[in-house]
Amino acid sequence: ETEGERQSSHFPVLFCNCQNLSPPPTGNIIGSGIFISPKGVLEHAGSVGFSLIVWVLGGGICALGSLCYAELGVTIPKSGGDYSYVTEIFGGLVGFLLLWSAVWIMYPTTLAVIALTFSNYVLQPAFPNCLPPYIATRLLSTICILLLTWVNCSSVRWATRIQDFFTIGKLLALVLIIIVGMVQICKGHYDALEPQAAFEFIREPSVGQIALAFLQASFAFSGWNFLNYVTEEVVEPRRNLPRAIYISIPLVTLVYTLTNIAYFSSMTPEELLASNAVAVTFGEKLLGMFSWVMPISVALSTFGGINGYLFTSSRLCFSGAREGHLPYLLAMIHLKSCTPIPALLVCCTATIVILCIGETHNLINYVSFINYLSYGVTIAGLLYYRWKKPKLVRPIKVNLLIPISYLVFWAVLLGFSLYSEPVVCGMGLVIMLTGVPIYFIGVQWEDKPRWIYMRVTYLGQKLCYVVFPQNDPSETEPLTEKSDL
Image (cartoon, rainbow, N blue to C red):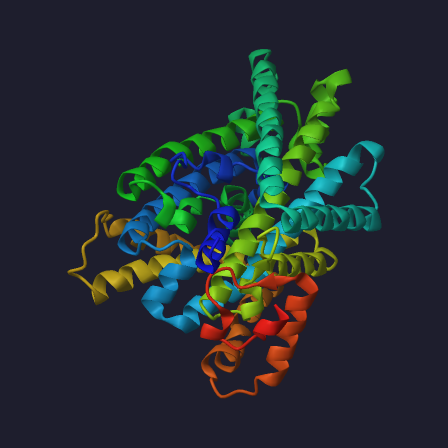
């Protein structure tokens, strides 16, 4: 085997081949968020009826955004999603800020939320009359993150098999909830869903609280732009990207709405708000001796969700490092297992730090605000690209009212969210802007002292036993000595 063959063979192992990828990314959208967000949506929406409206409209907003991303995906046919599009349209600084916020905020915070949900659902049966202890939930969440980081560091094959197996958990839980809920409604148990009760507000509604309800719901819909991260690997994106939108978004919206209707068929709004694990409370009320099925199913779902986000976030780190926007150490893979160990360790560390300092629903507002900020910048880039390159061939070209409608909603949502939760949302914005000096020092400054950077990189290579997967490092950066590899 030649050196070139050995190096190129790493890519099919590290990156899954998506040539046979099913167009609808429904399984990537439906995840642990539906077991986390209902409580937050109801709390901020103020009534059962308005919370259901938020779920339906949330799906509609995702559909508008997805159509815009479909145009971007075939106009700029690069994998990497938001990061690739913004870098191409606005340049390196804006692309770096999106990458910076994704690596240090979006992915670690999402992982922390899912890990806390996992520990809450596992521990809730042991503490039926109170919340699980703070230390216990954090400790179990940390153990879960460390275990799955080790799995992803050890083998890509193990990570993908775990993902395939644990996908069954979320589907089982949602199907069970919807079926049992519909049976309850057929029996006449729908008091909370009757119009006079459904729109009886628990608290006085405000535009700011409604904006926060949309942020909570958007966490459950995250994943709608999944195919844009692998555009280069999707067969016939011009046909398959719109098909994915038309099939998956309405289906997911229907499933989420039915799940919430099922919750309210057996739980009052007060019971749902008082529950720390909504699906567990639902199972205890309706499933009797089989109530143990629900926490196990949700635990399987969240465990698989953590594994999937670890895989995706490490891939984004890897891609950013290969573009020169992150330290080159993060673009290296293990010599034997071909896994991006440095990138995985960075994601794991950032997640554990956030895990120890945040509360679940505040973290959801935190990450959803940054997510929407990224989506808005990307879709604004679509309008700017139309103006900058009007004659560029666009296989998919959406009506201008679609991105404009999305951006109007986006501006109102983020403005009122920032007004209602200035500390939570403002902190995410501040952390994103800290990337500006980092970009000019780490990326733009070419004559900076290199000996510390090289020492750290060399030490990281020795500790993690990693090298570049493609080219000889000496062709790009003198990071290692050949005699030491």
